[in-house]
Length: 559
Image 1: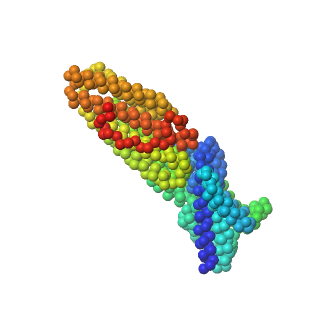
Image 2: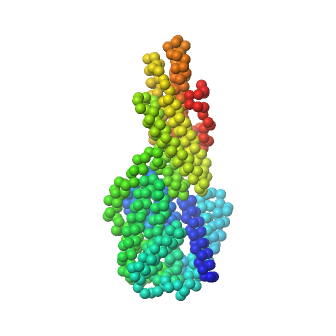
Image 3: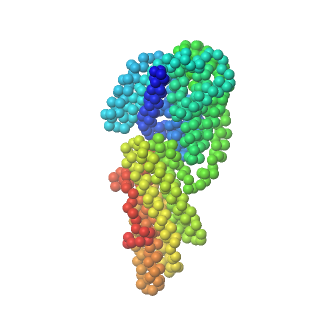
């Protein structure tokens, strides 16, 4: 019972250490993760190397996979680059095994584990900068990680001889499948293949597991890590499902091949271990095995990657064509704030383009506009609801200070876009009669200028100063149109009711341009935060602006 309590405590400490270490390293990496992934994947080989390096750094293949999905959605990575990073992340996740094999069994762990916990928590408590506190948290997690390994070694040592798993006899196919299933289950339960593999290596190093059974469990844990990607892809964006499918295929094929050649591969690696004068023992051999069969998997999949990418790009298209479904929002990206903010920016820009299309529809006139406008309005409403839910998820996470300050801008953008759709619908419902030729010409010019201002808000390189200047000119045009319309009414050229409705339509048109310019200004501030750029200069877009106050009903008052 005492040994069982030690094991349970060790597993709990191990998972806590892994969590602190991973979260701390992710927060410390911050925008560096984005920059490295975006700039170091120019070729497939560089993608593999980047995926391996970053996963080794943050100790979480799931975090790297989620970030990769976010960058594919953002258009910063192609699917081919994302698949290469997935290959690399499987190699990088083998670093945990090497840490256990090299440090966990050859050093007196308390000599550095306890000081690491103390120093790390001291940094966490006194740190005034978020990066320093994140490094402290990671250091404390590192210490807890190895303290847990020490407890697990003691617990497994006490179990030696009481479990029938350490039999040196040859294992049959069913036995191997049972061990593979056990490794898979451990990964699913802990939601960390690194944790499962570290447990297997510790058990094997303590003599509880035979080497062949432990190797089969490592294969199962490696396959089990795809469960995180599969769960993340359920109901997610098409790109998320494509990357998850690539992950499952790679790990599944690699695991099957490794299982088929398991005895031969272990014999070859044991010989290599002796030739290279590496430390003897099961943990070192298993760490070497884990890295080798993942490298073998990359070699096997490399020639077929192009064909795999083309097939994946042809799949999962049905929901992607549904415009009311978010293109970029994925709840799994919330764990990596910089990726989540980038996705939020892109989704807001996507909604802005749909709203701009509504404006063009209503100002362009023609037949059948009501059906199109109502369909687009429904799409905008669903997307804004999704953006609101996503923003709430981000707010509950551990956001860096600047991101937390800029997040209310998303609410402001959503409100302006929603109000613009309501104005477009209101204008479409108005029954306007034919205007006098001179008034019709001025109104056409006014509509044309409105569309130009709104187009400038949805394109690349939004210039807020120029848009504000053009919007002010548009306001002056509105005042002139209003005067002309009133004059036409006073001369009896138009009934009073039509004069009122026409002025309301002109005012609502001017408001649509105003709201779109304001929305684009707030979106620019969010985009700058997502790209880690300096805040806009004084006098331009503020870093955070509350949502606009409730507007009067479309067409009411204000002039």
